[in-house]
Image 1 (cartoon, rainbow, N blue to C red):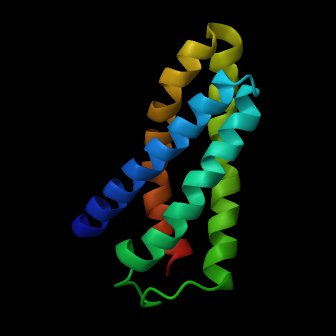
Image 2 (spheres, helix red, strand yellow):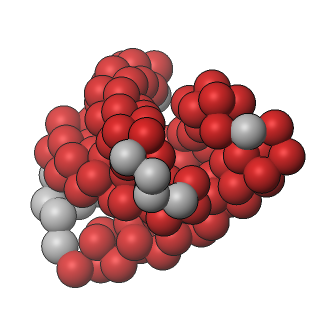
Length: 126
């Protein structure tokens, strides 16, 4: 499990960077905080679904197979995590300003990543 957490962390770090950069670029261009967050999370998620399925959880029961079941479970989890993330950045952006939303987003998403690891290991990629 520790090696899986390590791989999940590395892939998640790359996802977080892609997600955050897209978020900052879109909001800097004037797109709203919540739509930017959703688009940015989708960009990182597409990348992470494939990498985690092929490299992080390959020793799980599915042997690294990515099929419709795994995708549907991933999408359901992504929607729930994205709603939570959007509520967080939306509230911060509204009450504290865009600069704070930029700073809070990676911290909030990192916290959600821990929950996502266990959901991925025990439900999505099993």
